[in-house]
Image 1 (cartoon, rainbow, N blue to C red):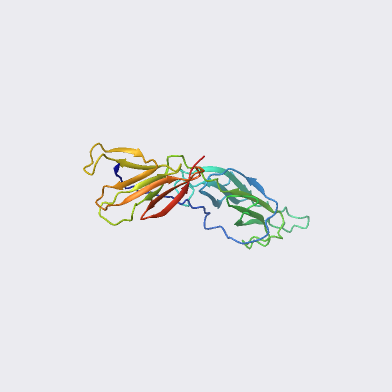
Image 2 (cartoon, one colour):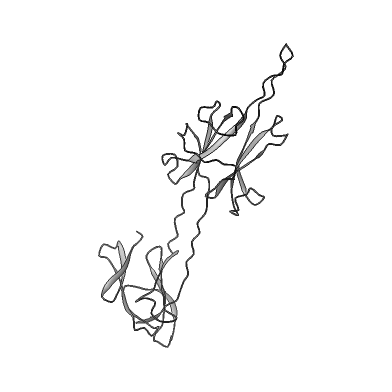
Length: 248
C-alpha cells in the first residue's frame, strides 16, 4: 500500500515563574515553613505599600497571585491566591519623663529556592523577619522569623492523541516532503491514498508494515512493534531510525 502524508508543526510553551523586582534572592538555611500546596504554575509575588485600611501604622502587603497573562505584574486579569499584610509597629508612648518611645521596626524579606523535599516539582520559599535598624536587608538572626513555601504545580499528563513528534521518513530530501505524525500513545498518523495520484486519500493510523512515500523520493520505510508490546520503531535504509515507548 502507498501513502500520502502531511506536515505538522508542534509548538511548546515554557511558563516562567518569577517575582517582582523588589525580591532579593539569597541562599540561606530555610526555617520550618508553612507550605502552600497545589498552586498553579505561573505564580508571582506582588509587593506594595499597605493602604491605611490595611495597616493604620503603615507597612507592606505581599500578594501571591497566578500571573494569568504572564506579564510579571499583578493586574485585573490575574488570580489572587492569598494576601499577607505586614504592618509596622506603633510608635511607643511617651515615657513619664516626656521622651518619645522607640519607633517600631519594618519588615525585610528574601526569596530562596525551596528544597526538593518540600517541593518535588520545584518552588520558592519567602523568608520574612523584623527589619532591625530598618536596613531593608533580610537577616536570618533577626527576630520574628516567618516563612511561606510555594510549590510549582505538577506537569499535566498529555492525552493519548496529543502530537509529540514529526517523523520525516528517509530524510527531508525533496520539496513538499511527506511527514508522519507520532502521537503520545505511540500511534502514527498519516494520510493514505490508493496510488501516487492521490486516489481515495484519507486520514488514518498507520499499522505495522512496509510502505512507500508518494513524494517522488522513492522512500520505503517500515513500522514495527517489539514482541513485548513495549516499544514501536520506524526503519528505513536497512536501519532502525527511532523508537518510542507505547502506553499500557
